Length: 128
Image 1 (cartoon, rainbow, N blue to C red):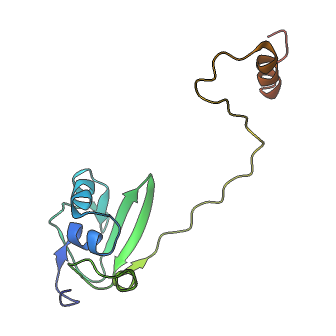
Image 2: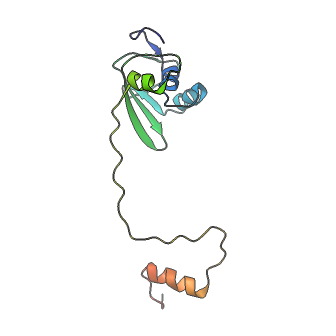
Image 3: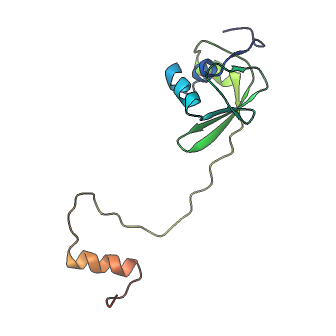
């Protein structure tokens, strides 16, 4: 752990607060443009200070983290949670949709009966 006010590399900080499992994964995310500091793309060696807003794109969603304190080494999860404030909005609620049947991959060509059921579900008539 460093002094709470001294700046540290963004890739090291993301690894230390457990956003990424490895520092190399954090570095790769920075190179790919998935990490932004204050709205600008961040290089792996860019420094973060307390108060900076870090946006990280993981699995298609943005996580918004505010740096509370800078740490370099990976610490326990409770200490890591104190180093970053998570301002990520909750994910949108999943819409309740009608049951969508799924055929197993590699199940082969549908039988005549299955094809008729599929057509009926898609709203097609037998004449289409």
